[in-house]
Structures are given as C-alpha cells and as structure tokens.
Amino acid sequence: MIPALSRLSFLLAGPYAFYRDVLTLADDPRPALPGRELIRPETLDTLMRRFRPKDANNDRRAVASLWSKEYFLRLVPPVAAANLLLSWHLPIGLDEFSVIIGPDGLPQAFKLPDGGTAMASTCVDPFARFDALLEKNMAVLIDALAAHVRISPRVLWCNGGDYFDRLMVALRQSGLVPQALTAAGQSILTEPRRTDGRSNPMYQPIRYERVLKADGTADVVRQPRVCCIRYLLPGVPYCGNCPHLTAVARRIPSPVS
Image 1 (cartoon, rainbow, N blue to C red):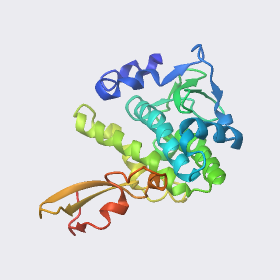
Image 2: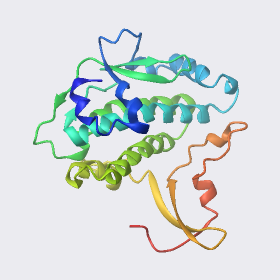
Image 3: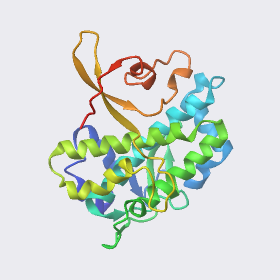
Image 4: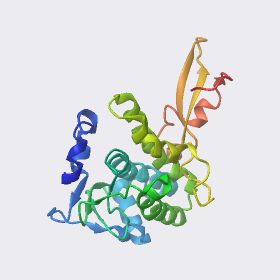
C-alpha cells in the first residue's frame, strides 16, 4: 500500500480489502505497461482478446464496455477516496503511471511514479480536484476506446460513474465520514455542467427510482442512466438493474430523496 493511503485502512476492509494492493509504487517488481500504451489500437485489441477470447468475433463494443467496467472498478474508488478523505492527489494521468496487466487482459494494479502530494487548501473547485482522474485518465481512455470500437462515450462514462456513485453510497452508509468531506464528490455526480461551462459526463450516472413490483409493493431500483450493452454478447444476460428491464416497470411518480 502507498504509505499515505494507510490512513484509509478503516475503509479497506471486508469487501474492499483488495484495494490495499491496487495502487503500488515504482519499486513493485511486476512488469507494467505504460499508461499511454493503453490507448493504442493494437494494445486495446490484444487486451480485449485476452479478456474474452470466446467473443473475439462478437460485438467489440460490448467487450470494450465490460473491460472498461473492470478498469474503473479498480481505479476509481481508491483514487476518489484518497481525494475526498485525505485531500491527496495521486499521479494517475495516463502519461504518469503504468498498469500491471494480468493474464486475462485486465488491470491488476496501477504502478505510480510516487506516493502523491497533499492538495492545496485553496483547491475548492470539485472538477479541479478531480482533474487527474476525470481529464487525464478517464477522458483520455474513454475517447480512445470509443473511437476504436465505435461505442458511445456515454456508455463508458456511465460505467465509470457507477463506481464513483457506489463509493459515495458506501461512504454515506459507513457513518464514519463527515458530509463535508464528501461534498466535492457529490458535486461531481449532481452538477450538470463543469465549472468552465462544459457538460459534465459524470452527471447522474445512476438513478434511484421507486417502482411497483408484480405483487404491488414498492421497491427502490438502482438504475444506470445508460445501458452497458453487455447483452449484445451471446449468452450474456441483462444486468438485474438494466434500464432496458426497469423501463417496462410501472414507476411511482414521487421522487426518491
């Protein structure tokens, strides 16, 4: 574990314990791929084939979407937690770090050149705080993937936003984190536009809707704004909370707070 992140030990337990080893430093002996190599078409093709060899001749968009979910699952929560709870900047731009790739073509860990630095107390703009994650990493990778397999960037941003939202929910439910520390993260998910006026691709990636079940009782459904299109692969079912499925449910008009 990166030394500065040891202060997150109270979170890195139970189902989150594997995050202890997701961010490593340059002295990690495992071979790693320079981050910029990830956006090369040849590299993407190789990783997709290793990830799902049985789908080599099937819809590449769905394979790329599933691969991106695995990437964001490993990257987004620990980086965002360090940002929000420790005000700690990690060098995770694609030009800065390397990626340790497993035999299945998925990231095992991210090798950082150093342990990061404390953020300036004057950095109050949420989008400035998350510039390294959103602009220097996610946006670059998403643009490359979208161009290579011709998938809508909205699908990939929703995949990444899903894990950001899951982190925010986990922090709220933990009861250990003051709301003031998570306010910047909440802004990333609730502001339709960035500070400079551009649209925010992380805006409301997840919706919480009240629906009527078959037995007439109400339930809350956690629903991605955009389908991950995994169903385009043979034998892969819809997600349980796929918007294509819940769209046919009868919604209760009152909003969920």
